[in-house]
Length: 79
Image 1 (tube, helix red, strand yellow):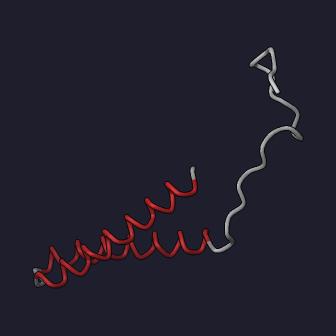
Image 2: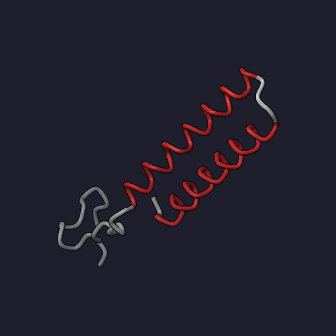
């Protein structure tokens, strides 16, 4: 259906409905963000305290995994 005047929106009943989430998306996203922030802070504290390489690697791996999962979820959701 075309509308001659692009400034006017179609009626609400014609617009596509917003995609429904799977229910636990908000909780999973929140947990991922919390783990990401904690791992970044942990890596920063490890840098200041002179911790070993293993601590830095562990915090770095957790950071990369959380960031990757958040990015993939964002791309899949289409937002």
